[in-house]
Length: 279
Image (tube, rainbow, N blue to C red; front, side, top):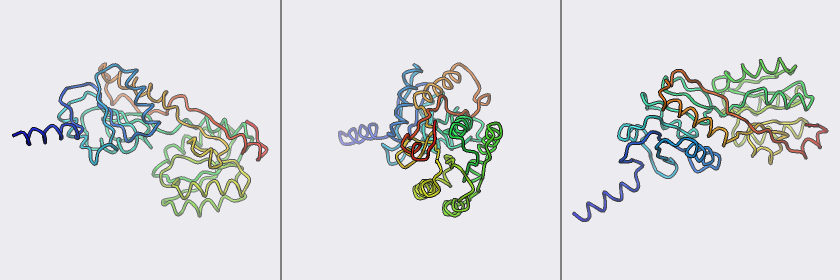
């Protein structure tokens, strides 16, 4: 009997299942610093009862079972792994935080990782570059490219677009832009941007003496001239506000996927000076 009790206590400690009802279930993909910051803000801004489960702390997490047993009123999924874990949740409203794109499920709304194209176009205008290379997978980022084309046209910028279906194609298509562009614009496209292709983007920038602008601060150390990075605190407040509306009775179907709030523009002064550019 004592052995059985110990086993039950151990399972209760290890498994992310909770006995008490609460309003918000926060699924966090990992202990990534950006995810941690967003989660901290969500928890502090929205005082509704909540539980946080970090997926990387467990070998496997059954989000459907947790929702079925604990009955949270709202699920917030932070990061790709957490968003994927909610795939079979059909009725409970889900807020996808830092999503790589919009989700077609009727019970899902959220915030993408895609800053409004105007921020990039303003950077490019300040650099006085006109022909901008973009490599992307239409199935992943076609919706965003449509918005980018509108912003670019307003800014007097011409986009030289290359479409790819695999990461291997990205390197070949990158070569086709040699001598035809004044800058590269890297999108958060999971096909075009991998560890290997990212290095190729910055090698191209150095060889062609053109600035590369991107979406993540880590790229500044790799040679990006500028980035439009996520503001994790602002995204946390944005997600907390969406959750509050749902808890107040709003219908998730009335919400959409929004661009991240208050993105942060950061520059690499050394690269800009080397290229003779200003910002």
